[in-house]
Structures are given as structure tokens and as C-alpha cells.
Image 1 (cartoon, rainbow, N blue to C red):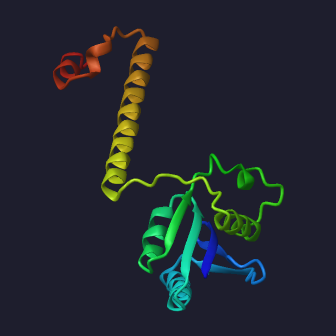
Image 2 (cartoon, rainbow, N blue to C red):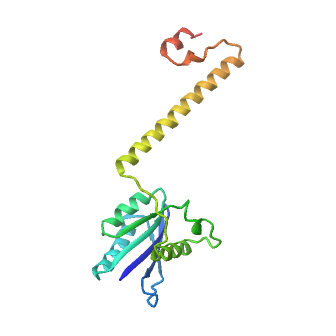
Image 3 (spheres, one colour):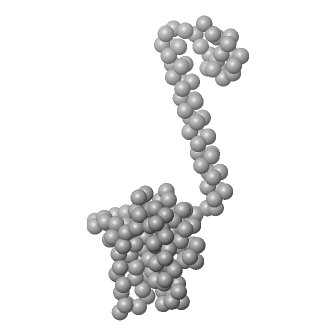
Length: 177
């Protein structure tokens, strides 16, 4: 037997809907867990019980800020985790009935039919490099913005200024007034 688990993941809690592959045996179990060590432990114990019966466990979860952590925790129990590409999964984004329980149920249903668009989740090292580059980009943009404001202020006060005057320590000292 296979257990299909839809997860609607948020910052402080996640909602879980479980269904099985047999149509006659619909579990329709919905539970909520906090995103705390105890909450994860309780959810992982549940997965472990399913696995102990010799069943497969497949989990579908939307891509959010804490999906990587969730995926790493769940894969410790050897469950298959599919990260959903939310840009291609319009069923949830455009749903009129937008509740955590409904979203988790929809995810488990589409997972059971193998109809979830997956998102690529890069490795930890690649993710760290991406975050570092993004931080550097924000820092550079901020620095350029500050320099542009200083140039605009100097020009508005009638103080002559060259665009390169704030680029080096030597230029800043020479233009010191």
C-alpha cells in the first residue's frame, strides 16, 4: 500500500492530509503539527508507523522558505518527498476555497494521481552560494544608491562633484571641504 500525504507548510505549523491508493479505503485524515522539534517528531513517528507496515510513503509539499528543512527532516524516515512548483500548480493558487485543510487535501489527491509539477531543489552548497550572491547584490545596490543620493545632494547645494569622487579613499580626501 502507498500513503499519499499532502502538506500545506507554513512558518509556524503545517497541515497534513493522508490518503491511500485504494479508493475504498480513504483515510481522509487531516492533522496539524507545529513546526517545532516536537511537531516534527510526532509527524516523523507517524511516517515511521506507515513504513513499519511495509507501505510506501509519498509526500507532496509546496515550495516555501522552510521546505528544504522540512524535506531533510522527512527524508530521514526514507519517505519520498516531492516539492511542488507553485507557479505551475494553479489549482492551489487560484482556488476559491483557500484553506490549509483544502490545500493539503488537493495536494494529496494530485500526488496520488502523479499530477504534481515538481520544482528542482538545489543542493545545500549551491543554495548557500545563491544566498551569498543575493546578499552581495543587495549590498552593492544599497551602496550605489547611497552614493547617488550624496551626488544629488552636492549638486543641489551647488557644490561641484565628479561622478568618481566617491569611488576611492584618495578622491574622497582630495574633495574634502
